[in-house]
Amino acid sequence: MRSHHLRQKPKSEEERFAQRIQQVKNTYLIGADEKNLAPRITAKSWIIVDSQSGDVLYSFNENQKREIASITKIMTFYVVLNMCRTMNVQTNNTYAEVSFQASSVGGTTADLLKGDVVSIEDLFYGLMLPSGNDAAMALAENFGIYAMYQNKIKGKNPLIYFIQEMNNKARELRMSQTTYANPHGLNNKNNVSSAYDVAKLCNQLLKDEFFRKVVNTKVHFSTIQDEEGFTRDVIWENTNKLLYQGFKGIKTGNTSVAGPCLASYYQTANRSFTIVILGCRNQEDRWSETMQLLQWCLSQIQ
Image (tube, rainbow, N blue to C red; front, side):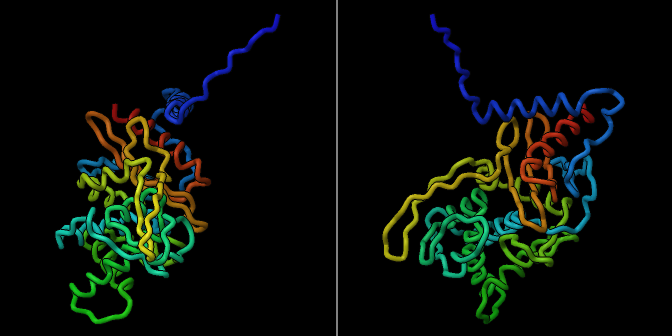
């Protein structure tokens, strides 16, 4: 008689995530002597901020200037969103054309092609979910034209004026450690910020319902028209895997200089926290270290 072994059903991503959270709890929240010590993590700088009040709860090297990779795209989103609100743009039925320059940017991509016509709303998703550098450039080029007209400037490169607007917004928000040099976050020694400044920008945008919806989306479907008039369907998956158990997303980042980065929003019935970690050892550490900091923070304020 043959014996039959029952094969376990593979765990879902949500179940694996919950298991990791429990492992973090078991590892980092034991022992009264260690309870008050911040966990040792690989991130070069980090911060935990109350999302509602803006109060800094805990931090490490929070004002250190660093390259921030695709965390840059949060400001790109903010600038475009403000321009849309100022001009009363209906983002779901207003379209932008993708240039050759935008389609040719390296790094993470939304798979946009020269001549593609994409709604502004879809470009927001292409910017934040697959972290499309092409989507960032398409938004910056098209809305840079508006920045030129707004300031009555005659020029040939709207991208320059969009980046100027990014820096104007940084000054308005008193992001004193921040300078932007591009809209996507690819390596550039002049494209820098700090964990504190990033958290400040995140909290500003978290007031906006549309932003919260976009960054908390796991998958987005879009139909794009190409330069020949044909359409194709695209699927964008969020690079942020921390979208469970109270985490509501914001943005990932990773370059050879900046290292793996993550800005996160965590919400409970009573409290909400913005957590920013910059310069982790590897990409997987972003998730576990954010959870470690959260669990430690919760243990301190209970």
